[in-house]
Image (cartoon, rainbow, N blue to C red; front, side, top):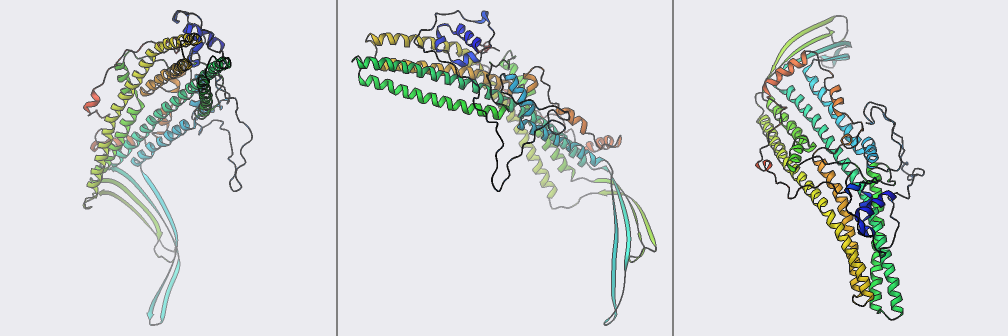
Length: 576
């Protein structure tokens, strides 16, 4: 971390004494002399030297498991050693990464990508949905069922009043029924199309979940750096106020200051102490959120060095997001699901043709097996519903309106995507542009405070004037600290909206989870060669194209607002 602070001092020159520590932490430790602004005079001695707050979580509990309650057992921990159901990755033995304090953003993303429970749950959900496709396609093939019975029968008949004759005995029977759909008027085809769309929707939802998890990891990483820097700022502010209190106490004792002046300083010291406690508490919260989202505690976090923005213009970001965004693709898949439901509802109004064969073997008498009988029956069964009192038409109308809702949701998704991309772009441009202004403001606030101290001793400034300038310096340093963090989070938000915030695209060399591979391996399980494709094609004659993407109907989605300011190059402090 020493090299980081050296670079920060070179970058900010005379403002180094008041530098927000996050600026140093978000800067690579390697020097870039050509990117650094000209050095200014060194900071004055009025800024006390305070050791920067480390990002390391100092207290990590790793003791024995909880003992539980008297009526409830303690939770049992069984380490996940990879394998088919672990998703680490799927169907491969992958050792669980060692849980050690995280030092780099690449380590945090890699660990979360491999072990985050929310992400693993979404992958398992996608794999589960994949099996719906072979289940739906199995309806094109034959169905064979067999049954057997061994039956006891007793019969009594009254022949004359009060007198009964009866017979009883056991008999056995067996039956086999073979059915083969030939043409279902689109019933089976629409069910298969709906299953394919559902599987695709779940894979698109997995992309959205992954982007959210990665965004949470980036946010947690930056938050710990930001809050550790806030603690350092609060410490430096408190040290500055304490030194001023000591000086004012000395002046008060020689009757050079009033008690009111001294109490004003004491007030600011107490506020500074409260600010420091709040900053320490917020850092503790951020460290716990880090563990929740990453899966390991933060160590000595290094400056983040990922998430490059490669778009040359906002128009390019719009176009890429509309074609690649997981949200847009999920909306398209959802519309296909309800479109297939419309085709399925309409298919119920038409006929269907099935082949059915029945073979039975039984006894002539229900009371014994002395004489046997066999039956072989072959049928071509044509079924056509006639009257249902409007039930099928109501279901068609219901499905059509549900599809209209999903189509309009697609239109809204395009609007939302453009808004999210545009907002992230504007935030990124504004934060990058303002960083230089904040540095100049820190430098000016530092000089103003230094000058006010001299003027106070000469009697030209009041104690309150000096305290207000110290507060201004604290405010601008905190604003600079937040802006540096916001710049990086805006980058993550822009990449997430464009569908690029995914583990393998962020961390070079990270092996990605292949959801398409599992789908390809299971989707044709149970297909009958030649038979299933032929019957599927025949059934699709009445359903139309259920796989094409629907066009956008919303006129508002055809419009976009350009950038209000150009996107500058990354600031030297935050450039990866």
